[in-house]
Length: 243
Image 1 (tube, rainbow, N blue to C red):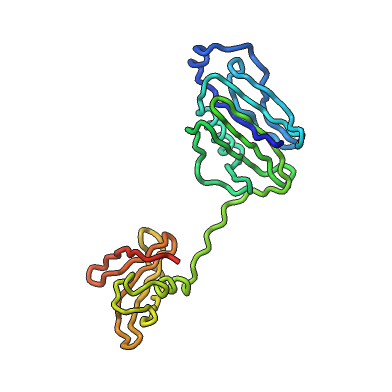
Image 2 (image 1 turned 90 degrees about the vertical axis):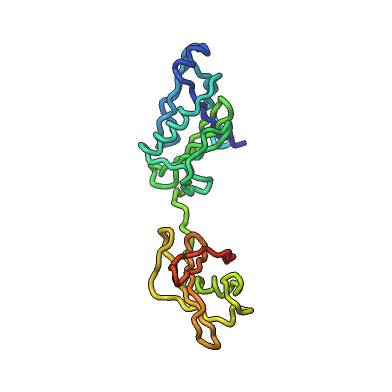
């Protein structure tokens, strides 16, 4: 059974003296698998219960830290140090870099920290899992795991942006017709900006009379449609279902 490593958050020096400390134990200075190494979490050795074991399936080590005092700031600082100084990234199980910072305020949690392996193939990963005042850290070499940025969302083509209005209803857009098939949607050249984001300006005409009916701004980035008031040039958001 594969076990993930838990990291314990170590208490402040003052709290350590109050809690009472046991004999000093020998803690690892680094975590290593093959040629890959990362520095170990720094804790007060006299005030931590520690064990080092080997996963029977992967034959890789894992380290368990336990303390009577819970101080997750140490864990947070350790993760930030690996990110800033050792080119590590918080990733998901597929190696996708996570932009959102881990929530260390929770009593339980799991973090995957990864960096490119020194072998030139795959990644070196620390799986960190904490629960209350105990923490387990599991270093592992993942030969097929590639750390990468999350793919950017595919931007809509101009045709797809026009279809946002064509698939709406006249009532959604403040028009009097019964169907959008009665109207032509014509995009203007270039881009406009709304809320600091690029958008497209579209003009709507009645097909029978070629009468101008109104202008609309479609913002693909925030998935919103605005009605452009010609008299005030104000952009009013509409309740249009984004498709």
